[in-house]
Length: 109
Image (cartoon, rainbow, N blue to C red; front, side, top):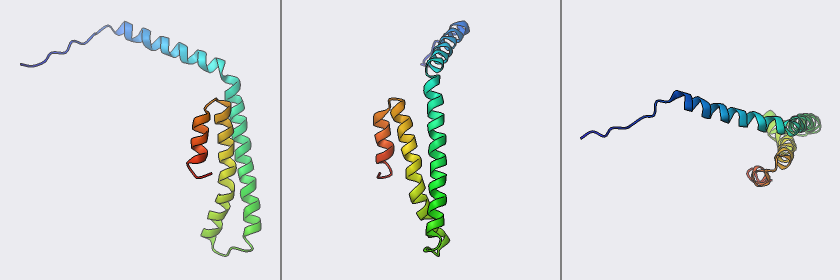
């Protein structure tokens, strides 16, 4: 009383489907390359701004905070939101508004 599965062994049909998927994916990438370049620029600027904020925060807080661990936490508390705003802008540009709100709402911003 074993069940017998019938498997379609037409490998050519499988490769045709995969080829059609790759062509569709390629077309999507070609159409959205300006958004991809813009997103890369935005994330690079956000990263650089976050680094600048971290350096400034470290400079101003290092005189007041003696604990290295607390200093690191405080510096990141200033720099991470700057980077998250960059991620938010990228998601807005991509049209993913709900996901963008989730990214900001997740850490409590």
